[in-house]
Image (cartoon, rainbow, N blue to C red; front, side):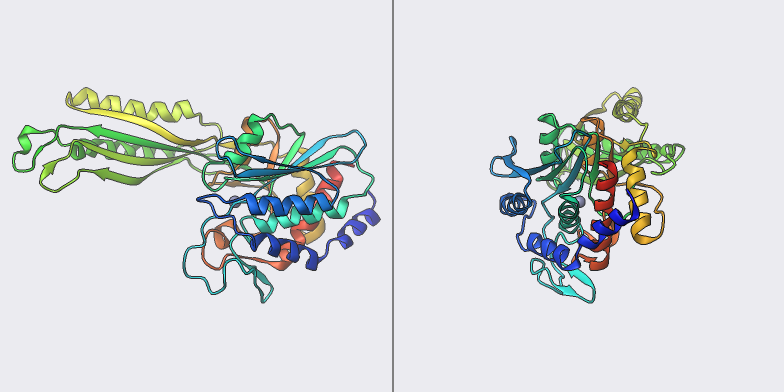
Length: 393
Ligand SMILES: [Zn+2]
């Protein structure tokens, strides 16, 4: 592509258009839980149809009434397929806002509202980017997927993967401050329950106290936490384990017969779930060997695999070059502690997917007065547009 085609695309990105797109999305609440994504899915489907995309709105099998919206723009010339992925649900607004969370107010160069940053703003950038490159002489196709359910059970992207979605490369538009994320940790939740025998609190020797049986388990988790610091990933740092919940007993005057802790175990790329589960099972077996009364079980209710793609993937290089063209600075690459839908696209669908979008997920998302700088929306849309153009040229 020569410089003039870059300029042509960049001048097609208008601040007013992106802000209007983002405001319209924010003003259609899609709070999850419970997950009322249908109105925003229908709205987005309308935008994509107006742009001439081939659009489908399909309910999730596991959540009837809650749809994904998928739009396809086919250049008409044979070439690769680029997947753009963004979740259309938002977390509940909570309290403490200075603005109506669904009014999409622009003030002092920022757009405020639930989803402004995570991630209706970045979705508006993707839509504006497709609009800007539509009509350019490119090859292949762009599939835009607006998915439900990311903030709770990742059901929207899971459905796309189960339905066999295919692409040569992908961009998951979570807010990364426009620094490409090429690796993130996995997230496994373990519920460990110890069992005892109930008895009157005044006659504790007649029972087995399940809370007391949890003591060596907690000590074992602390020791595991220390051992995990010996492992490291260049972009994601150490794996971690944290006890997030503890439940045990029903009343002070009774010996509890069960106690449960919930662990949040973050895996770095290269660690396997089997390895992580074996560490926990091994710890429980070691306790059982010295305490014949010890009985415990482990459940793994939530899991997301770690993700990593090569730094030389074309999608990563295109996003870095696009960002440098727009901002004047090569952003490099980074790793994340959080998981997102990209893990399924990479691990299950085999699509090299880079997480990339404007906005700061740590500083601006999932809190009161969520916002995104209008200037970063413009930069984000421009970077997406150039990356699409270079990947499909
Ligand atoms: Zn998000």
